[in-house]
Length: 186
Image 1 (cartoon, one colour):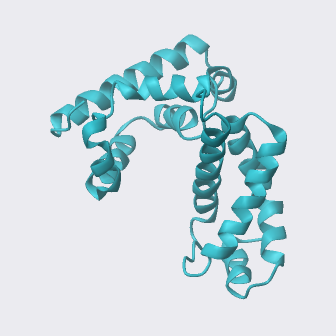
Image 2: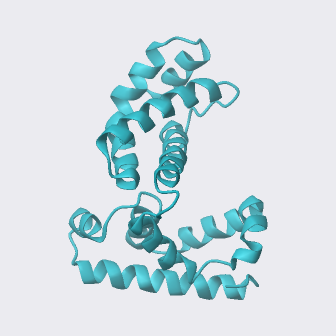
């Protein structure tokens, strides 16, 4: 079923919208969540919470052209929050690893709260990602948006693990350089 038809079902408050969403995007959403929480039962809870939140967010939002991105953003935030809750005293090593990798090339924490809300920073990141090669962009997004492991990225793109690591290292360095050129404190 087309995304705009699914959104229409949400707007009409037809419960079939959830079933159609699950049929079309359920596997992809579960995969995204599972990469973060690493637990099947928690993943299922996150998926169900995503459908509930989508139900309450549509309307006023009408993500006709970007339904998967809309849902992916919801499940990613729910999964990260669930991960934070379950690891309040001990942080998840995988999330820490990814945070440390990006920590060296994003602006300092003193300014990050302002920058997250700053649309100029979001536009900068979008422009940066548009400028890099499609494969490199996809590797970067698979690692830092979808939380894929180096092994999974290697298999997905048919390249060696060392090439994935090298590519990510170079992209982070390139990102750091671009941020510094734009005047962001790194």
